[in-house]
Image 1: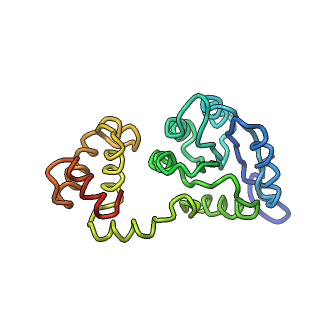
Image 2: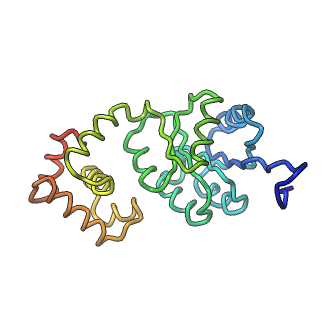
Image 3: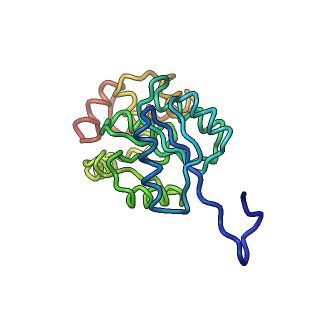
Length: 218
């Protein structure tokens, strides 16, 4: 039962967590790991993207720990629907694979962090606490060259959004697909691309992708 207010003699309600993974061993393992912090509790689980959306709408968990690879939906699709049914929920992608493109797509879709499944219990709790504070937390092993990329980004003059749009274009996505991945309007995607082209001194997106790659951005 949730306390109506905090005061003398009251105990804060624990942070609720929904675990989404198609492997029961992982779901059970997360519950064990979260025992490192009694202030967090797993209130439900789901094996597919569709069931995750349904359960999130029912339970309204503070945190959603989401497997990057589910059998029925891509992570960006699940994230978009989770944000629709439960905007206040913080979404952390949980993956066994250092899939750079998949993780970036998930983050671009609105995930608040990404952790590898071999994370220790105390590290998992610490990372989730950071996410609850509004920080974006990504395991440094996933993007080990992010420091170099940040330097290259600063030199190029590109904004983070311009870079994200250009990176998705480099993956072969069309403007409508980029708009869907990022939640931006199509005209906004076009504006970001045109701005990126101008800053890189490129005449078209192919040339821009080539220049960005040479600059160490892609």
